[in-house]
Amino acid sequence: MHLPKPRGAFSERVLATLASGDAATIGVLPEPESPEDAALALWCLYELSYRGFQDVDDRLEWAPELIAVRRGLEEDLEARLRSRWSGQPAYDGDFATAFFAEIEAHDGPSLARFVQRKATADQVMELLQARSVYHLKESDPVAFSVPRLPVAPRAALMELQYDEYGGGRPERLHAHLFAEGLAALGLDPAEGAYLDQAPLAVLEENNAMSLFGLNRRLRGASVGHLAAFEATSSGPCRRMSRGLERLGLAPEMRAYYDEHVEADAVHEQLAVRLICQTLIEAEPETEADVWFGAFCCLDLEDRVAHHYLDRWGVTA
Ligand SMILES: [Fe+2]
Ligand SMILES: [Fe+2]
Image (tube, rainbow, N blue to C red; front, side):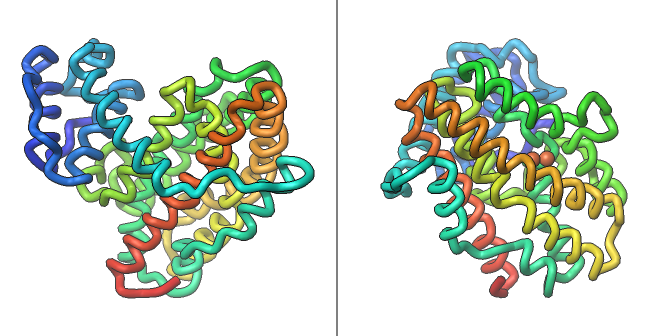
């Protein structure tokens, strides 16, 4: 992946420092010009912990100057996410029942419903480009949480991740299935290919997952996010597949979504009952963050949906 275009003086300086290979050149940074300026810089700093950039020295991942910048951006992001949250819901009975009820009660706009019924091919292509920012690193953020969990949720998360990473078969790796779908549609399957077009909502949605995955103290939020993601995936993936079929678009991309209709119906049970619930049993202090992570998943996806529906001047 190559470095993206900056979105202001702040990200310009961070990207120039990455390109220079010398973190000491960062100096005193200006304030971010906009939330997008900050979000892009944070996304790029996080990328150093995934597959990195061709034009950046891998050693910069742990450069103290860049870690300090990352920490400042993370604190702002976490404070913003927490300010949107109204807190852990009160419930009687078991966690899983309460969790599924909360997901059921959530009533956000649905891009998948719009794709199923009305979207044009151009709108679907634009959406898939935005989705590529996450789907090309599907399940990578929560993979950082594996060694941070107690025994029962650690085993269950690995069972789920085994599916996400193809069960030992590279051609079945979910991120790879999505890349094949992009290529079949004539889109660029390379990571970062559409980063320059990603709006703030998409950058923030992705940064939140890295924030939770890369900070051990937020392991509850990491698996709570995962549980909400899996519990809101199966039905929308069916709708995405039907929309692609309606438009006569590449069957390879439908195969990605079809794979998730059944897989995520299993994953939601695993994530809620065997990952989140067992984590809360072993480490009750993580419960509030499990709910917080779930809220962030739903809220950030609502923001992405609003962005595209507003941009296209439509309702879902
Ligand atoms: Fe997946
Ligand atoms: Fe899944």
